[in-house]
Structures are given as C-alpha cells and as structure tokens.
Image 1 (cartoon, one colour):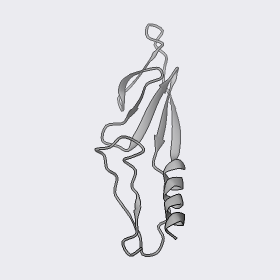
Image 2 (cartoon, one colour):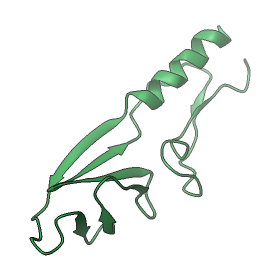
Image 3 (cartoon, rainbow, N blue to C red):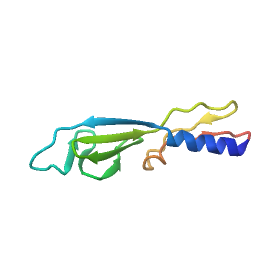
Image 4 (tube, rainbow, N blue to C red):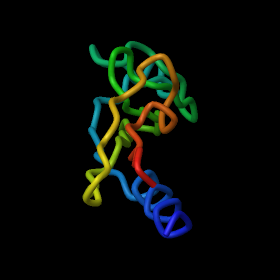
Length: 100
C-alpha cells in the first residue's frame, strides 16, 4: 500500500498544469522575456514565480508556465500545503497519511 501511495504522489507532481503566454518581442533585446509577473529573464532561463508555486521559462516570444497538479486524496489522508520557501516542483503540496 505504501508503494502505491508513493507512486501516486510521484505522478501527482509529474502531471501538473502548463500554460503559454505570448509576449511581444523587443527587436533591441530579442533574447529577453519581460512581463510584470516575472520581471526580466533571458531566453533559456527558468525561475520560480515569486510568491507562487509556479515555474516560468523564457523562450523567444513566449513564457512557459508550469504549476502543481490537482490530486485525489485517499481516505484517511490529507493534502499538505505549498511550501513557498522551496522552488518548483518541491513547493507543491504532498499527500500525508498519518495512520499508514
């Protein structure tokens, strides 16, 4: 049972959500992504969004976002909270089963 739960927790982190945001290219700085949410990043750079458990990656003309997935919690278990002191995906909440 513990192995099944461990595998379930691993899949919960792997299968999160993703989103793309198109941003205007600056001809003077084509290797830079800029927006109010993440500030300035160079193409190829990845960082955790401040105050959120979300990873942002800069690509030419777009920012790729990834976040924690939603999971079903088995009976007798509970979903933890995000730990914003850690980078994505380590900040994603985990499942805890105190009686198992």
